[in-house]
Length: 419
Image 1 (tube, rainbow, N blue to C red):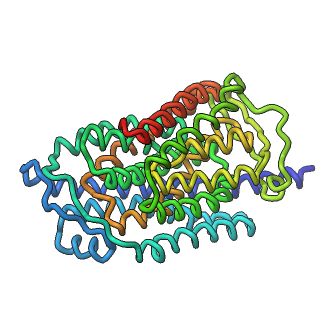
Image 2: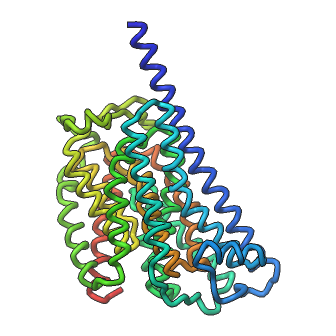
Image 3: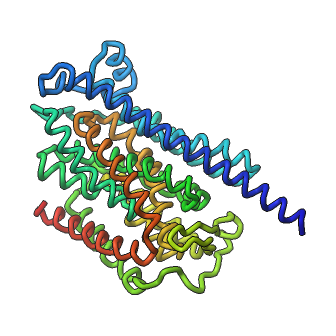
């Protein structure tokens, strides 16, 4: 009995070490990214005291960013900060391989290595060979525009961290309707906002042991493949039809969640055989009730299939597709709402990174738009992560359901040409 307890304690210590390593990578990437972006902002806006951004073009390749850094161009410095942010979930996946190796978990070393391979193929294979878009920056972009975009983005990050959405669904309307940003650049900034939300919030969620790392890593196989497919065909499909179809799917998918709105924890859930084999069931510490909550994982194949669709939506529309991820984990796999939203936040950054390389090298990520979005969303997501700990699963559902309806209605409105 003592030997069993000792082994269980040793395994728990190894898992805790894995979580601390991954949380540290996310936190370090976020802080470094913020620092570099702020250096570029100070250099380009504050020191000259001109009020306008220096230069009207921005580098959209890694050699271009490096050359710009050597020349001391503010746009290149800001772009470098954004690239660090985009690289953070990729580095997190790479570090996770070593972390799972520390646990001697060969299954997840292989799963995580597969996710990393998909990401690298997307960024350095597919992304390096995509066609260029017309690179246009915001004309007359002032420091005031920068500040207003950042403040507007804080709300998106806050709600995204609470509901596991990613915030992109708010970013695109804000940028296109309020700031008159071109749609392609708004989508590019939205992808960056998703990575910012994920990295900012997930660092806290992993540290607090609310995220199911194994569920996240396994499902990332489906989401990354879906995101690559979505990014590749995004310029070939009719946006109107896509928005209408996905808006209707969201409304229909929300029905089971509404019917269980008062359910604090899933009841009568039986582990799927894959869940047992892949060690997906887990526990989390509920700070509100001060107790450990164990949970099971059902219908793994259905959840995996829904995750591919979530990735596809992310690549197509640049919205993070956190709604689909949370729905997959809550309604199909029957995870507690807190685990669904925190694991969704953990995953959306990797999903977005799979398509971000394509958007960046196509010229759709304008640093003068994406940088204030990233800073605002990061601040909001960190505040949201602290707030979630004090909410119940029922309260989270009451926040999430209206968000689903809002997302669905905004999609339908954009499909109808009203937004």
